[in-house]
Image 1 (cartoon, rainbow, N blue to C red):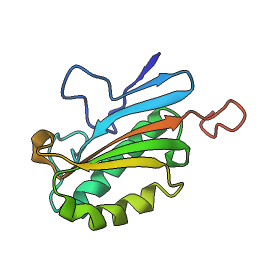
Image 2 (image 1 turned 45 degrees about the vertical axis):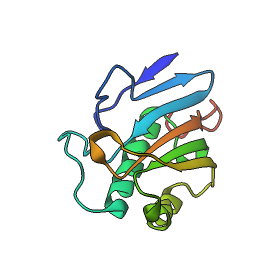
Image 3 (image 1 turned 60 degrees about the vertical axis):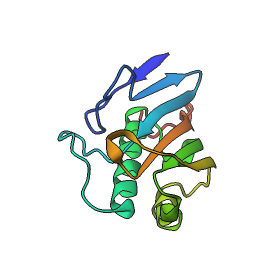
Image 4 (image 1 turned 90 degrees about the vertical axis):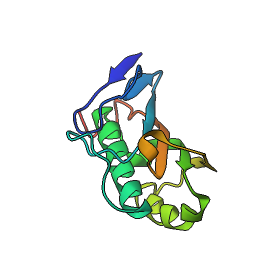
Length: 132
């Protein structure tokens, strides 16, 4: 296993890694709308928070030398299912390859954010890795 850590995504706020690579898969911990470097929650509603979450995921994927096109599965958590349509609009801009997904409403998320997303992605093979 290899731990992935980048200052371009929020630091872990507990005893976990930002992401782990194992056997060709990248497992990204759930990302919330924290602005990297400041630790502050992005201002705004579900669209702004979902955008920040996706940008944080993008930073982790890049640090793991992969990208959104290699995402296999996402798990999405919403504080309010009434935000589902607006969340989907933002989500669709980033996850264009349409990975498998679960989306559930939960009672409370860390720091009282509106959404959280975790992802599993493939690594690029040695033949098609644009990061090498």
